[in-house]
Image 1 (tube, rainbow, N blue to C red):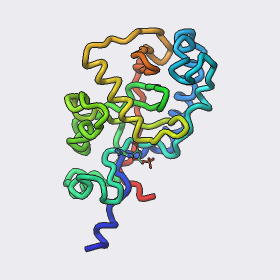
Image 2 (cartoon, helix red, strand yellow; image 1 turned 30 degrees about the vertical axis):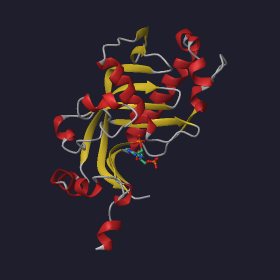
Image 3 (tube, rainbow, N blue to C red; image 1 turned 90 degrees about the vertical axis):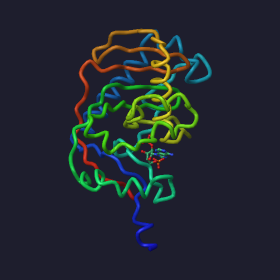
Length: 220
Ligand code: A2P
């Protein structure tokens, strides 16, 4: 009936516990601050501002509220596959459980700032089979491994929608899969920083950040 239809959430996902949210916000702001000062970054500033002018990355990306990793965007049932997802046994069984997410990389583009999430086999049970294929602007992403899109949005440039973060991650991973090594520009304390062209930066974390997160949903 109609009651069941409105019962579908805006999205399902893992919501990071508040203790780790603060730590990630600090680490990610420190990273932006450092990135901003690197000569290699300044060399490619034009990607960000359209001019060779300085940008303050901490101001450039608008904060996003509660940190989470979306599994399924349902749009209250209007999104394709929303009902099937909500009815999956794994989704019902895991609802309200705490998982340990592994944040394995940070990435920055002129549009978005995010953290890549490397999902375990167990966590992949909650990942929609078509999440990578649904990024229509990155057709090659369809052949990436399941879960490639998993991420936490840390910030978006003004006027950019949050959904763009996963698309930007898929673009970087597609370049990697096509054999583009990128340009390894810097060994930072946190890990290796690589430039993939047109404003795409990826920092592979030497030590992944372990983030406890509750699998739940957001109604808004
Ligand atoms: P993301 O997970 O990359 O942050 P919004 O903040 O725009 O209202 O969206 C709510 C959440 O759902 C965000 O986490 C957002 O992206 C994700 N999202 C929004 N639209 C889509 C979409 N079309 N496909 C997948 N995820 C989406």
